[in-house]
Length: 296
Image 1 (cartoon, rainbow, N blue to C red):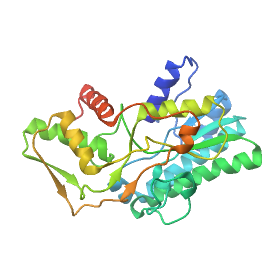
Image 2: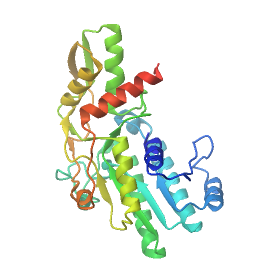
Image 3: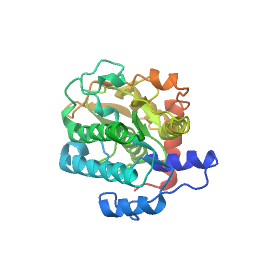
């Protein structure tokens, strides 16, 4: 999702020599393959959008996969970029790097000030390691490897697998299927009270390109909208966009995760960027993409 959004944004900006590889073409867990690729291509800029990602259930079940694969991806790419003489690189992290009970909205300075959310701790630790990896290569080797922390993302080419998707795409699929079946109700995990921030992936891509091309070399930057909604409000918006007319019910036996995750985006705004796509507009675009792919 993020990679394709970056490719769209770079194409819109007139960048004609965009180098990409699918997972089938390049296994980022294979250090030699990654290093050979970077030595051959020697790109001017690298955006690390690849990651092993998933929702609460996937993060909690596949804990070893999430920490191992993400550590390997970032280590292979960052070290390989350095060996290939690449000066400019952007590492995309996640808002889950911040402590579970971090003051809201979360500033970049909250990093490593408290305990992480237990359900996604392995993933968060891997992402924190990626940030520190970039900082270390900057300090020791004079590189310009920057880190950005996106909030919860959604959009074109999202993952709608109900076993390992994030909350918003899962809700879109559940609402669509409930609508087709004519269900009387739609069950949502948790209490509906946690608050979450959601950013359309094409807005993220625009922010990433903005920071890269502006020559920013400072500390990590939060990328978000600066506003949030409850899961109940999110579900209500999704069912309205999808056209599901039944009732919403909440399964309180399921975990809520972190009570609130809102980004402080003051640093990003000071650098001349803010989100453009409203939540309802973005959900409508995502739903049209879902329909076009005829997800089964």
